[in-house]
Length: 126
View 1 (cartoon, rainbow, N blue to C red):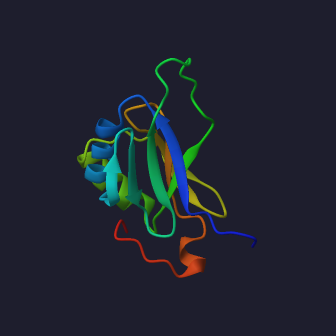
View 2: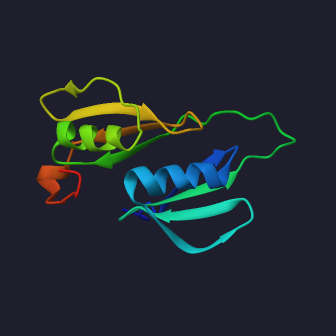
């Protein structure tokens, strides 16, 4: 690997509202000092940076999805839905179980078991 992934940047209309969502639903913590139009949240091995989308440019949704690794998708789905996240149906394949949702800005996210068991990662979401 040439360089590890250190963050995912999402361009959003409302940085504070989107940060509150990821803090409340996934318990991510603010990293460093927030700046005007920028909040970075610790996500374990990869941080999530929320960046104010330019108001003068047409807002265009990037083709991105944030994947949160969990051992038990059903258990994690139930907990996250109690926290206000609407998730789709659970999909099962030979390699993983997952379901998809969206944050308040319409960015795609997923909870998935892919690689969690084999990597030895332990998730508090099951």
